[in-house]
Figure 1 (cartoon, rainbow over the protein chains, first blue to last red):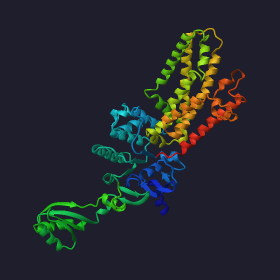
Figure 2 (cartoon, each protein chain N blue to C red):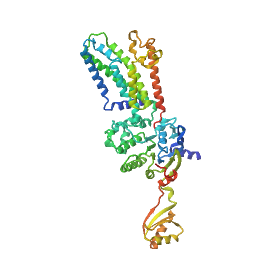
Figure 3 (spheres, helix red, strand yellow):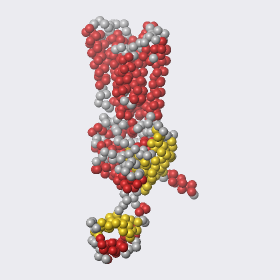
Figure 4 (cartoon, rainbow over the protein chains, first blue to last red):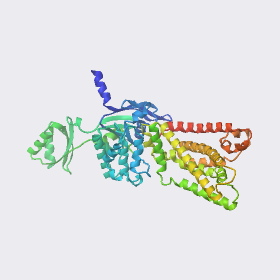
Length: 318
Length: 248
């Protein structure tokens, strides 16, 4: 029985980092990194500049040799069975660079010729997915950065990868481009059903799109954390409430056992309290029954940024 | 095999889709015509026929050298430009070994050098036919082909050298500069025993014509063995560096 469930666990893992290190001149750039990426999840690789994010990604894709450890992709070792392992990966590493004197289509054909078992229709499919149909016959040098990013994604999806690796995908894009990129990533995860690894130092980006974040610093794994939903429902929440009268609100709160007053701001007429999730409706009705008007309720989420600074030791983020 | 052919097609397209692709061929045609005109107007009886003219001019002292230079310039960037333009990253994250990718590049270097040599030969012959006619003279088509063959040997060795330098330096400019420098000094002969083991005198295969030698004590077989050895070493260094290098 147990063996069966272990196997299922193995099946759902797309990429496995097994104690991967990169040592250059006696110094560990990446130090014994171990983590998994599971099927269908979007994972963020977070770290301050110089933490080893790019080195890690380059080792996953075979651009840089590993000093120790191995990366297993769908059961194939990047070290000893590179062609099979890389066949399940699509990647954009740093900026997408193309042969600028060729058209977008000619560039994609280059990569199609280097991939086994893809039919000609696949190019049309990925081009449509990223919405570049109109630009396919234009030379890449006439593309905007956003268009090149999209061509980069099309290139990465050509071989129907199980894992898409994007290194700083929103680097240099304007806000509209960043949003567009995010939409593409969501759509790809849905339409193609693949896992995505995104490295970034833009925390809000990771927060908005990823299911999990892997935080590294100085080449070492700091923490792996789930982002969003599930575990919050049955926990305490921190709320900031704007009320009609701060004094009467405090009077009421002092009489309640389930709510704890954390701070008050009489200038903005706000109180910040901590209470269990299930007690929120009770608090609201208590307030309105006692004639305290409620104008706003906002949740004080601890943002990933605060966590990040905590994990990586404060202001060392560059 | 089909996957390797596809790699070669890719590399050829990367060369031929450039807008400047035809420039070297045009230069070759222009120079050949011009040279024929200059020689003919200086002394109209210098060559008996187009064959005489071609057999002489296709050696590495004449248009042959231009063929070699154009082949070097045309292929110097085949590895280094992938690095400088950053396209190396997309190139190497495919299900193809680095050895196969580099081998396809080397194949295209040879194909390109061959195409330049063929165009050069045709252009020189056409120029000779135009200025000196097709009849008369001593040489025939055999002498002409021998000349282009001698020169092609040195073209292959030099483009292989440039190929290796391109891998080592990842700079197109340095590759062209260094190879051109070697090409300039290769006519220099130092009369010492050790010099016959140096690459340069062995490239002068035409010197063996009529029982001569570039230096005393050298034979055609000796030179051919030396050239094969040098070429093999250039390739060995190039491939092992390319296979092992971290793409940072």
